[in-house]
Image (cartoon, rainbow, N blue to C red):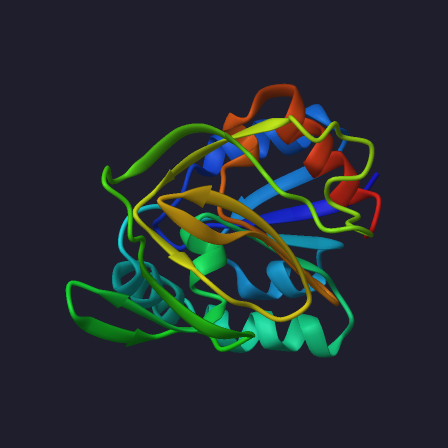
Length: 200
């Protein structure tokens, strides 16, 4: 059984993520302990709310260096929603740019869409070779709640569209991330989390 830490830095659907991961067979610890985060088979970085506030929470527990140490030790990381966004170089909200963790190149910016937030179910245009979406039909829907997104990223990129195309998921070596919430996406989200666990 894979041991997964859901990082508790004051933001995110921690218990929802825990339950979703346990549903697909992981042993889950929700903690702010960076040593535990470093040692686990998998680390999930959740996140809701503002980019800058999430970065402040991560900085407060020294999460940035711990996540970088995980990657140096060849241990995978999964970012969810704002937990995905903070992996990028920077985020821009209300005209203010905040520094991100810089593990993925690019900026997170406000979506050019007539209605924000983008809230509800949407399909994802999955790139060939994706491990996260393996075995899923093209019309599979996932649950999104966000007003900001990255337009570009490194690695294997899967996109969704709300007003404009945006990065819905990234698979870049040991770093995986989803803009949508797999823990709120029912069976589809469970399948994605199970696929991620299979890579650990």
